[in-house]
Length: 210
Ligand code: PCA
Image 1 (cartoon, rainbow, N blue to C red):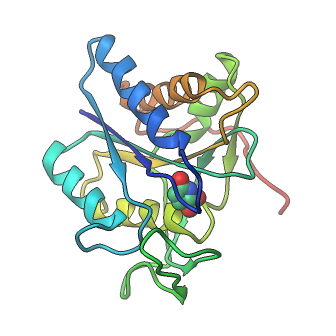
Image 2: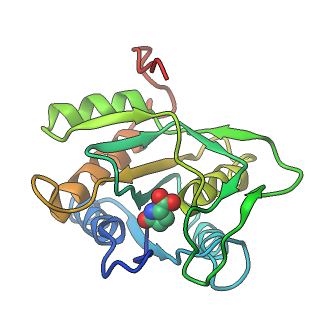
C-alpha cells in the first residue's frame, strides 16, 4: 500500500497543489494496478484531533503503508524538491490554519534532533529528470508545518524499518508545473520507492556547498 499525503490550503491561498497532485498520483498508481490512497492533512501544528500530526497518525494506522510520500507546497521552489532531513524544530513564519505560531519549539520533546528520509531520493531524482520533470535534493524542509509532518512521519515509523517514507516539496502550480505534472512526479517517486531495491539509494552526489 502506498500512502500519499498533501496539505489543505494555507496562508490565505485558495488552493494547495500538493493535495490535488497527491490525489492524481494515487489515481495513476491505482489505474496501473497498484494499491494507493491520498489523504489530506490540515495545515495545523500538533498531534491532537484536527492537526496534521493527528491526521497523519490516523492515516498510518488505517492504511498500514509500505511506502509514504508526503507532499507540501514550497512557494519559493522551482523544482520538485526531494527532502533529505527533518529537524526537531518549529519556527513558524506565519500562523497555521488554527492561528498557532510556535517559535523555537520542538516538534516532539524527548525525540532525536533529526531524522533522514528513507526514500531513495537520488534514484528518484534521476527518474524524475529522465521523465522531463525537474527535481533536486533539498537539505532542509524548513521549519513550518511541512517539516513538522516530515519529522512526525519519520518518528512514527522509526520502529518500522521496512517502510520507506519521506517528504517532497512541490513548486506552486503555474507555467510548466501544472497539477497533473506535479502529480506525475509524485507517482514517479512513489513507484521508485515501492520497487524491489527501493530501500537502497544510489551513491551519486547531491552535495550542496551551503
Ligand atoms: N506547505 C507548508 C505547510 C503546508 C504546505 O503545503 C510548508 O512548507 O511547511
